[in-house]
Amino acid sequence: MNQLIAIAIGGAFGAVLRFLMASGIQQWLGKAFPYGTLAVNVIGSLLLGLLTEALVLQRVTLSLEYRSAILIGFIGAFTTFSTFSLDTVYLLQNDQPGKALANIALSVISCLLAIWVGLKLGKLSQTSLITWQTMQIPYGLLLINALGAFLLGSSAAVLWDKIPINPIQQLVLLILIAACFLAFSSIYILLYVIEQSHVSTNHSPLILLAVFSNTGVCLLTMWAGYFIATVQLNPYR
Image (cartoon, rainbow, N blue to C red; front, side, top):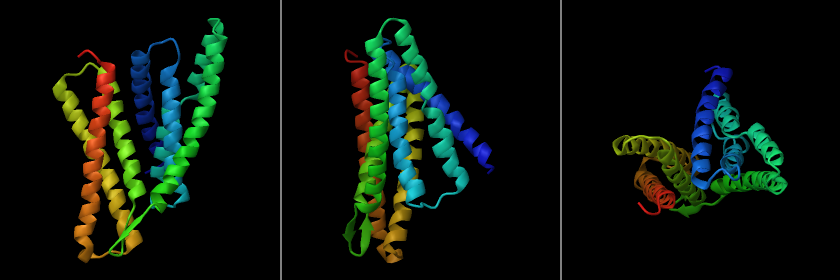
């Protein structure tokens, strides 16, 4: 795939997801402060640090086009410096210098911290291991997948509250999102275990245990994120 096309595809998904998530969060928390822009920038910074460590610094086998689509296209379009700047100017024009300064401080400090945390989490996923019968199980990666599943579930609840779709469509979309996440995260763990532990077919029960553990933990945390966000959005429903 051409690198420019890959970036364009990733950017399209990132821009749409940013619009939906920022709009949903802004509707949820109110318009007194640019919560939506702040949230997508912090989440994007966390993902950029995590994926930079995993896909670039750790030299995970992934083509340049796919890395460009994820790091430049998707995350580049998901985050937004221009909207942050515009929100800050609007606050100043509305005689709210305190909120403008708070937006600047929170955005800069939170995004820098999120990048640092993402890099640390990426490194943790590669170094936090349990050795069991000559096989190395990356429990750090399992924890990161669980965190990603929680955020995915809570984000889905925010989006469903914003998008007028019926419960059947919500269920179908949630199943598709969960299936894609579980497929990619399980394949990553599977490849990591096979590559790092040099396992063979004799270790297939242990490999299946690692994959099923990832699936179970991610499904549980995804449901928890969806349930908690739904309760917060609709406390009296």
